[in-house]
Length: 211
Image (cartoon, rainbow, N blue to C red; front, top):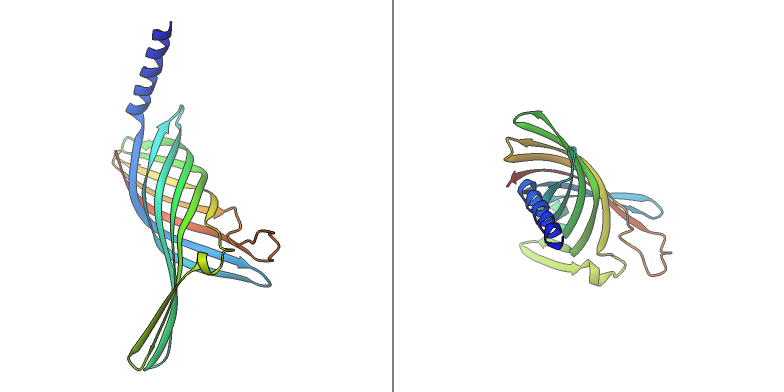
């Protein structure tokens, strides 16, 4: 009996491995950070992401796809006061994200498969830096701050919730577009009474190869 059950488990695992699909790719990110205090202020970041997901079919077109992604975001404002005087502030953020999406797919044609997906993602910001640059009469000054060190109220972790659509072409290439919202306050002291909240939301558009 034990051998029979072990055989069934091994066959099920082999069948799952045979139909599971890896999607590895990259794409464009547009992220907005909203800070709410007395007033509300939005800062827009642009960047890219790269990584892979592992799609595991369940039944009736449903499946689950855990993944691992790296993303880089950047924003900056330059100011030119005169021909000899200029300056600017640049911010960069780097993340590791672990999404777990539930998806449903159906074949539009023999060569095209359309899917919708959605779910949570654990987001960890491991780098958040601000660079100050100035130039005056040929002399250049640059100073970099680690925002996690200068202000410990900045938080590393966030939980995103989102979804999107994907189109698979000939079982080789996937085009996707999605949107997500951050659920946690990215700026909070231990007591949570600072009167400031920082949240994120963003758009992603990308291409992936299917294996």
